[in-house]
Length: 191
Length: 191
Image (cartoon, rainbow over all chains, first blue to last red; front, side, top):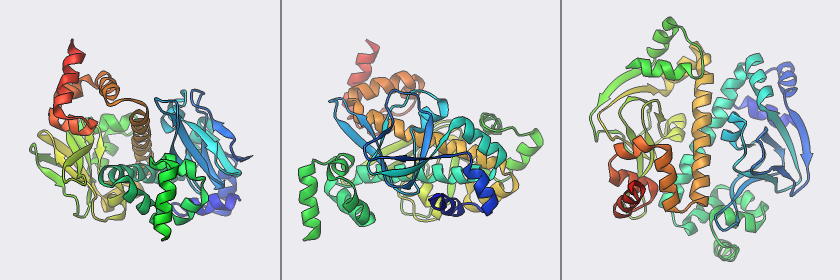
């Protein structure tokens, strides 16, 4: 499964098979069952996660104590509470496996060592964060310029497989819709 | 004024005076008067901007045709439409000077050359994007967990100088408040 990671690296940088094996040694591979909590809000944020297979979600509790899903991560996506990770403080978000998943994890110390030993990884992560930052800007654009209905249709067209794949109550929470309204929109989309 | 940039680089990487002069040569320094549009939504996104002095804002037109300010950039902040910049496509946002400003600009070709000639700049921009991405996550957290009133008070405590500095109708737009309600909250804060 580590080939998923190698392919992702190769989108941005060149690494030989030997280098890849060395780079991989800075990470741990873990298997987590569906619903497992990988990061609890309020606990020290020790890891970044890279999804080899499966799906993670990031969530918080809103002022009413209701879980709101703020991000999903499918294969080749990174996920962490990035501020809490960089400063090694308490996480403001929780992270949970949505499916049985295979995940690469790295802690801050290992990542700093990785940068020192393989400076090309600075370029890789520069691209990872650059695109993640850009994705948030796009998302803000959609939130400000589209109705929730249009946002759903847009999202459906961009990620049809994803819309089918994740539990609908989580997708509804992510899109800011009630599960009932989401299922109405899906019916509309199919008709 | 380029010392503002040197100091910012030195937060993340080490550069000698000589290296800094070389690095600086990949950028252009421009002075823009208040209200000047640096990037028009719909036009090719050619530049990233770094604020040496002054202030920029990023905005879009919402579905009602009203300008919504989505980001501000003060001294030492970078601003661009990062997706449009990376893929050299049409910008989804406009960028305007809020004050008379002195700005560093860089185009994509120069930035790629800079990375090749000074790989340490990968580390610098890795940090820039990492923190910008993390800031967006924090912002989402506040949006989901705080009332608009609490968000304003939080924002005021974090950036008291900034709240005094920018035009109040822009700050109101950024915070999702009417100018009238913002001025009511400011009175409350002072009392």
